[in-house]
Image 1 (cartoon, rainbow, N blue to C red):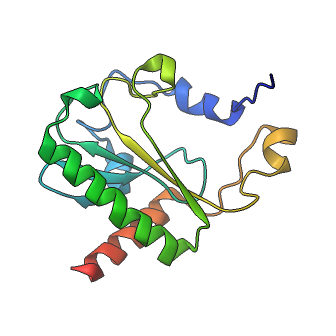
Image 2: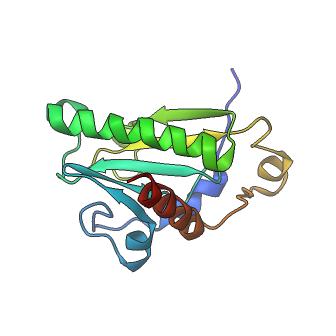
Image 3: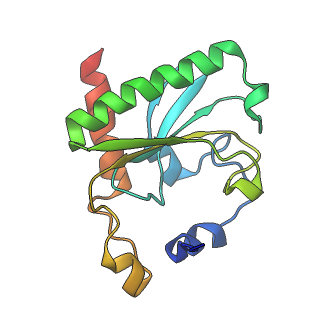
Length: 157
């Protein structure tokens, strides 16, 4: 069995805070929010795996999928559908990963507030830089990606 490591994510875990970034976003996190609904909201990941990596979280501070109300589930997955369409149109991605990490052992960085990751993918989006230098090359700033998504969704209304 091969083990794959993601050392570039160490920076993310070293910035652990007791404050929930979803409930009490700081100034930087607020800039990353690009869409809000009645039950949930969407923001660009500050430490993305690829250029277009967003999260959708309910406003309620809950930690498990089974705690989600039907209205939250519907809105979160409606956002996932809309974001998927935006990713294909704006970023010309070739695929998308959707995932929820529930609990710290599953890899959840913020285990106390459930959230859905949506990650755009392209053939070859993980390259030699990750292996050789322990660095990930992301071609655009997360704040710029958030601005693009805000504009896209504003024009969709």
